[in-house]
Image (cartoon, rainbow, N blue to C red; front, top):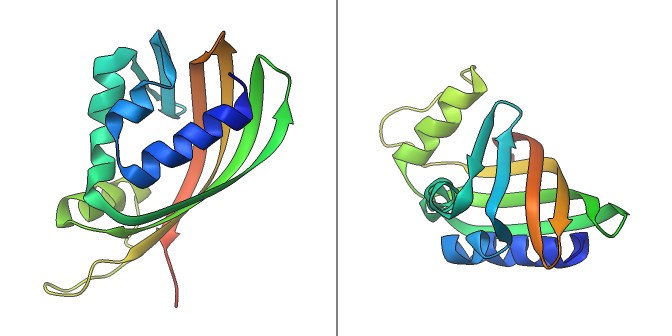
Length: 141
């Protein structure tokens, strides 16, 4: 596997909101660093983390491969989705450390924009380690 194949699978797993598809991209001891300070390792942790994408609707992922060395690669990715639950909105709001979106009870949930970089290392036909760095914000009209 190389970065292009990984990103195709990553996009498909995210847009389908399918944790099994996500887990299938990784080696049995594969690691996914969703922040510089958090890592999910192995099928159970990867699947549990990816469950949160089920709180997203109308997911659209695009990407551009920036570097490909064969056994590793870097891609720039861009994702938009509709927040589908108050739970997901609260996860996002707490992670920002700010009050970027002042919502009153009953206000509609926002559509989010995420922009990030992914670095992946490969072992044969699977990813052994992926690291992402990203930022999110509500989409403006």
